[in-house]
Amino acid sequence: MTIRRALFSVYDKTGLAAFARELSGLGVELVASSGSAKLLSDERIPVTPLEDLTGFGDLLGHRVVTLHPAVHGGILARRDMPEDMAELRAHEIAPIDLVCVNLYPFERTVGRLDVAWEDAIAQIDIGGPALLRAAAKNHAHVVPVCRPEDYEPVVEEFRMRGEITDATRRRLAARAFQRTAAFDAAVAGWLGRDDSFPEIFVPVFERYLDLPYGENPHQRGAYYAQKGARTHLLARVEQLQGRPLSFNNLGDLSAARLLALELDGPAAVIVKHGNPCGVGLGETPDEAYEKALAGDPVSAYGGVVVLNRPVGAALGKALASQFVEVVFAPGYDEVALAELSTKEKARVLVDGERRAFVTSERDFRRVLGGLLVQDRDADGDPLDAMDVACGDPDQSTWEELLFAWTVAKHVTSNAIVIARGGQTLGIGAGQMSRVDAVRLAIEKASALGHSLEGAVLASDAFFPFGDGPKLALEAGVRAIIQPGGSKRDTEVLNAVREAGATMVLTGRRHFRH
Image (tube, rainbow, N blue to C red):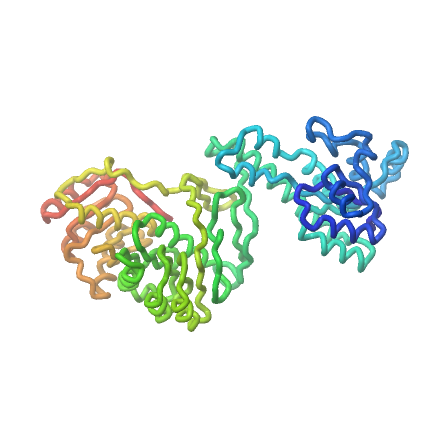
């Protein structure tokens, strides 16, 4: 399919002049709407103003520009159907073989916190999507171009072959429908933003990063960022060194970042296979990392490390002495980078994002033939809703309990976290019974030489029996935090009270699967 006539109507004029000049040089007649026509005319590129075809200038404050039979008839006519071509001739409409359109920046506009309603409505593009959809529908005869990145490949193919192949037109048509669908979804999402669970749910994700493979080498994978989100996992993140990020790296990085966001002061989080294996708080990031690593150095091997403070020389050396898959921090000094560079494969990421994550966004989980959607479990639990069932925790004990409780929220259920001194000592994750999760946390702590005397324990959901708390109390735990709500709460409470320990009931569970 050759190109004799092209129509331009673009908002983003990046690369437009060069694209149009190349097409004109190849003998293509150019037609353009007002803004695009002015740019081409200013660049001394031959162009016919669209109003010469339609007999109308822009109407209704630019709301009606390209919506005209002389435009859409020229795009939608099927060249292989004599009836269509006869109608074009009868109405003196010339075919249009290439349509170059990009859409209004609606998402950017509504992303402003102070956007006025009328400004947002003005950015709902009508003519642009109509042009792209028409060209894409008739891609057997028309080339739809919707982004500047496609300008050069289209020109090159046309120059080399004298036509645009079916495969290229089909690919461009798919891209055009993707763009118009994403635009409509953004508008629908904004207009219906007060409805958390709409009848039709149309989130849009854009490919951000190709990955070497998926969860396993035989699976393909890519990372997609949600369009319209205030920020995302890799927004303003720069990779300074190391191998390409993998599917599993990103899953662990997300888990670690979400936990780190809930911790105050210098903190270090080490995640392996989606679960924290070591979490530490300290006066300095060095101390925080030392605690996190010591919490479970065996499981930390090959983990993802997230720090919320810049990395200095000593910490850089400590990180370089371990096998770490990913290091993520808001900055590194030169000595730290030099130390880390000795581990060429380690992925070192610097966090340049300063925008806050929106805690009200929803979580999605793919299930067979569908999608589970829920509010993100991101809000902190209100202290005034917690009940001290027994004991009299002092300020220090409260801080320890809340630290363990925060970590437990990010551990796969059934989840048990034992901690002391701003450090996790034993984590029991993903067990089918809660008593086994307690046993696992105790066994891991003991195997690593951690004394549990005076430690605290957090459970992500209630204890159905008193066996789990009894095991923990016998091991030295002196304070427990859990939701409560079991039919045997009295049995659990009596066990804790008899041991002279403290128990806090939060009234809220934090399952994670």
